[in-house]
Length: 148
Ligand SMILES: [Cu+2]
Image (cartoon, rainbow, N blue to C red; front, side, top):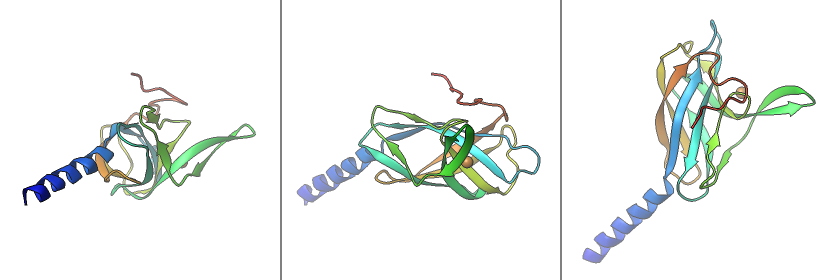
């Protein structure tokens, strides 16, 4: 019996190890007027094993998609991607002009100072919900760094 308890504790500890992805500075841009789409950004820091973001959802929008921005012969376009790879020691920053999370079918405009929950799902780590804060429309700028 004692052995089983020890085993259970070890299994829980092992499961915990794979969930060590920090979701830092989740923020969204305020949306102009009655815009139905918005974008949000975040820095993902993998502190465990290699993993992958497989999806995002939020009650603030009908759909949330992972997008990347590509330079198509000088024209910046964005397209959906089916995941974002995460490697330990290599934080991934989603920022304006690069990878982002597209919020489609917003239920209300995103106003400065608003907050809403977003749930990330991963290939290995347990789903994680964080609170996103809405910042000014110009925050971050093209390819903007959020600082260290
Ligand atoms: Cu997009």
